[in-house]
Amino acid sequence: MTEAIGGSIDGLPAGSPAAAGDRCIACGYAKLPRQTAAAQVYQMVTIVTLVDKPTNVVLEASVTLITPLARSFVETLLVGSNLEADQERILQELRVNYGGGAQKAVKQAYRDLCERYAEMKAAGGTYHR
Image 1 (spheres, rainbow, N blue to C red):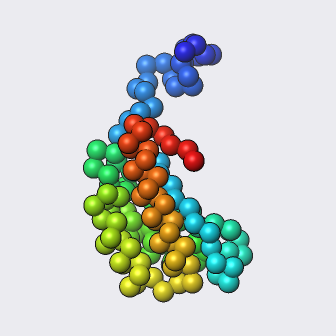
Image 2 (cartoon, rainbow, N blue to C red):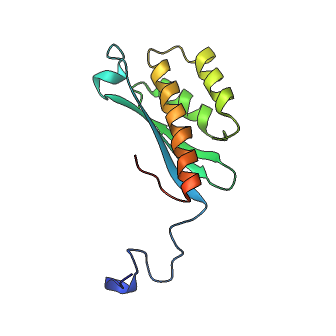
């Protein structure tokens, strides 16, 4: 490690804690069907979550769906959920209550999110495929 301008090490302000805190960003991706509105703007549906690592609970969520209502529905469903314990419940909620054309893609992106989070957690940090 080398000291940078302004007394920081590796881009962190001097005296700040290490970047390995209790929160992380975990993401999941899936290809959208061509006939969906979201596919006209995005090729992939992306779910981005801020996760509390000690509890595995989603603190914040963002999803690349076009309509505010669909986006809000998925984000609200995810916030407060546990990425390890609540997977089947979330997938069931999406199966039963999300009737949008992107349903399969949203479910796949959620599965991918959970897999990536588990891999990242097992590796003790970030994971890139």
